[in-house]
Image (cartoon, rainbow, N blue to C red; front, side, top):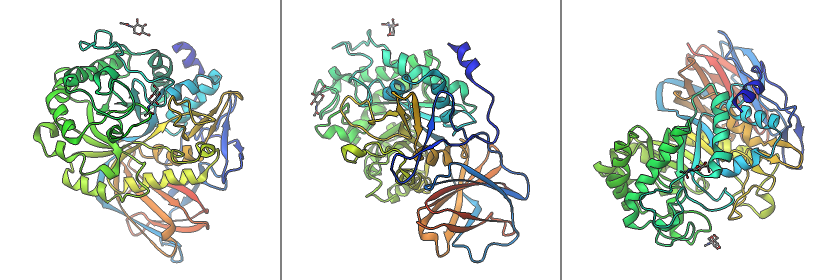
Amino acid sequence: MLMLLLLLVPALVAGGTECNPRDFGADSVVCVCTASDCDLQGVIPVPGDGLFTTVTSSRDGLRFAQNTSPLESTPNPDADVSLILDHNTEYQTIFGFGGAFTDSTGINIATLPLEAQDFLIRSYFSPDGIEYNLCRLPMAGSDFSIRPYSYDDVEGDVDLVYFNLTIEDYQYKLPYIKQAQQVAHRELLLFGSPWSPPAWMKESGTFNGSGSILKEMWEPYANYFIKFLQAYEAEGAPMWGVTMQNEPMTGLEDWAWNTCYWSPEDTRDWIKTYLGPAMESAGYGDVQLMIDDHNRDTIPAYVLPCLDDAGCYQYVDGTALHWYADWWTSPDSMDETHNLYPEKYLLYTESCDGWNSGPDERVILGSWVRAENYAFDVLEDLNHWATGWVDWNMALSMGGGPNWANNYVDSPIIINTDAGEFYKQPMFYALGHFSKFIPPGSIRMASSVSGPGSGDVIAVAVHNIPSQTDVVIILNRGDSGKSVSVDSGSGVEFMNFAMPAKSITTVLFHEH
Ligand SMILES: *[C@@H]1O[C@H](CO)[C@@H](O)[C@H](O)[C@H]1NC(C)=O
Ligand SMILES: *[C@@H]1O[C@H](CO)[C@@H](O)[C@H](O)[C@H]1NC(C)=O
């Protein structure tokens, strides 16, 4: 298997290859990939002194279109949008970007011809593609599985004698994690999230529905985390981190799929008494431990009982957030949480579009609206202390599944099993405008946007520390093109260029 894969990995593409567009009747197009053809963005170098490069995707069909121009010594005084970078004001360090190795992702990828599978993995992970480096995986099953299960479904097995990874890990998660590790030039950081403990550890005795874990199971469940960390490490996929529980508040409701309620106080007490000490003594004290893993309308209230308690605080590294309440909650809660505990980071760990849509719109092939939703949210979150942004399923079927609880949603890659091809949605490129150009270790810097067209525009500026370059990412949500003038921060070097209507541009230049 490994030999075969090595032979399949071709040389990196210089300059990238073109999108093969297809119109499914939405406001934009998908790029079609088959066993023999797939667009790859290629290695996009930062240009030499005196030059800058723009990379643009748009509703009207551009996908990572590159243009290199000279820096100018004066700004465009008539620009619709002016942007000024402030290198002296720096904020959070970035961990990275990525998606989730769900069972459904692997189930879908496995239906493609091998060469198309290889294109898909390269598209996400290789220097030819959008270079994801931070990925989540459910610890055992989630709703994006074909059955609910845990790593120990033997009732009453408190010693976890029967703990074991499952067929899903071996068939649908680990093989693709391995392939990603193989093509990636960046270190692949993985973190696990449980949707539910084993059903027999819970009050309800079921994976779904409402309720919590039984208190007498607190110790066995901490050991269950350790067994998971050991099992994945033994398979060559050690964890960078874990979140304590996916969306704990859903366990307050009669929830249709795997969940478990943890009150903020129980979170505190379990971590300080069981999980934290267990990780420490098993040699996993350096594995990142994140709490909340739910929407930003839960912060800061949900994380305070833990962070205000020295016993819990010492074990927790950050707050994980999902985007599902971002439409009606202000990012101010992120600033507030950051300001209370600036040494504990904020990380977006799950988002998908289509989750609140009608049955026919769970997947929309070629939706620019959804690309814009993604880009806007990433920009807003980065501007409010997010240290990264991890998408949900990396690949779903034409219907947005499989999902054992019929909770179908959209994904940046949709797989058409019958045709042996897959479609890169506009969302794929929207995320690529960040993931490819903001490597881990980058630091956000201050920037300000002004000008008559600035109401349509949101931007972020990042100092790419590993390559000593600067990166600016701009989203134009307007229905008209914009002339843009970026002051590199020196006051003597300006980048004057145009952005099309409904577009995302990444700007790259060497800093001085
Ligand atoms: C764990 O599962 C794998 C794959 O299903 C199997 O090969 C292995 O024997 C199992 N180990 C135990 C201890 O049951
Ligand atoms: C929980 O899952 C079972 C199937 O395992 C299903 O029959 C039941 O309706 C689900 N509960 C809720 C509240 O949806």
